[in-house]
Image (tube, rainbow, N blue to C red; front, side, top):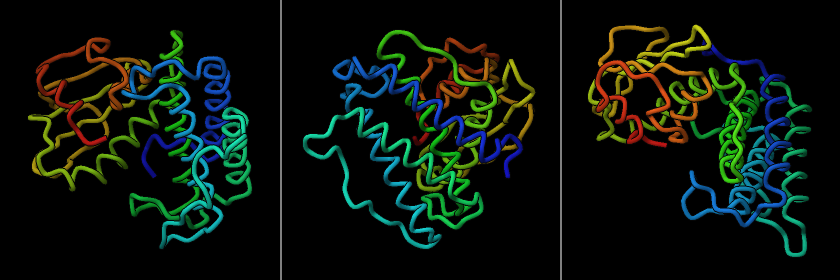
Length: 247
């Protein structure tokens, strides 16, 4: 497991907490645009996330590491209230995760760690990012929990970039980048070039060093926070190139 990986129940509790915050923030503002998700309003975000929850619940129920399964349906059925549907989807996933052993087999798109634990982590982190999107839309944001954000930076590098960079040969940082948390000892040093990701935990020699609270670093890693909220030492070009990496 990665060095900053939270445990299963911590991820499951985070998923529940973030979904409650999404429901509270979006319920009366579903027509509001989402600045961080172009062409979406909050109702689109809520539908997306509800569909994601139902998709992963299906994978957990099938419990096969070998094949992706499709949910019976997608989207909100006619005549069903959107927020009721969303809260049902999030609760169903939460309870299904509670009934699953963390090591139970389950397909995922990364091809690695084919377990329910991978899904629980992914859903907690996706919900945290979309909770920030939701709060930004209604004009009042709060930070992501520090430990969850540290775990999220680790996942962004070790799962997403590790999966996506080999399929994006033109992706490049143009140098070595170090991400360091100001409120935690966690740091990562990485380089992306020629379809290859090289990284290690900890600070190291780098062309650019970005330091900030774990929440800001994590949100920056998903292009949710601007570069200028972080403390930059070294090449701005290398730091800014992060936003061109696969998402």
